[in-house]
Image 1 (cartoon, helix red, strand yellow):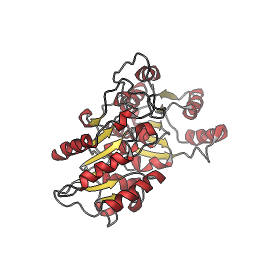
Image 2: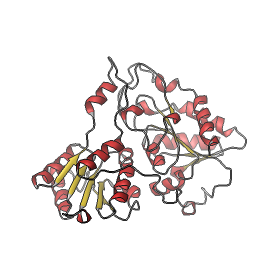
Image 3: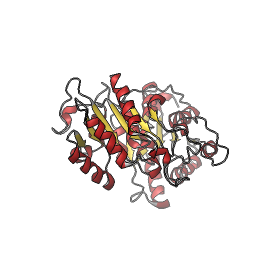
Length: 352
């Protein structure tokens, strides 16, 4: 079958950050193979990342908790997928659900490839014995390798999900407003899914306090949704008048991406917000504790110069930050001084 008639299915469920890392790869594929139809199969929250990415990219939502739960649900999902007449299947996830779908496609003689997660190398990276600290292939490269094995080699070429570089601020509530010339906008996303990736609240408050004491004050936008975020952001916004709790005034991810595209810098943990800011082309100062950029999860096109981390013999102790601290004190985070973060912010914003 000629390339112009081909139809690729890309499977990536998982957490938001992992799905966001597929954006530069899907975009590069779409631009370099404009006659190939591409469908991204993921959870509903990921729709804003792909629905306007390129003319030949479609998004397909799969509710794995209800509609497509269990083997019966996956069989139903498979029948729905088969009706789309896909000619190649790219599994960017490689978990039980995607493995089952792969099995069904393989039995029907589809072209199927899946991601190599380099699990053995990752175990060496977090070993408590003789640790081997070396950079692993990035998720971006791992995704691209899947496509190459399917016959679609790509050169990664991506800047931002917004064609003009910035989203339209006029679509956001009046509380955000337009950006004044020479005004500095700083995003801060201080939380993550696991404790090993979170900078202590009291120390992040100190960072915000130092920034708020400057003349002129920068505008600080706090990103994150959840009980912890709501409580902390409420206190900080009450204490510091230049802070905005983004979750209280923006409706969803698409609006958050628009705002991120106008930030001068985002300060983030190793979390989804690092990846969301990255796909808008915004520089990210990322703070790493239990995890490490060498595991391959740095934000798209981000510089190691903007990474804040400590050189400790126990780091990294976890690939995803979900392991208990071996020392019991999360010194890898607590020993990062607020001044280190402030200095990095000033360095990045001075380049704008």
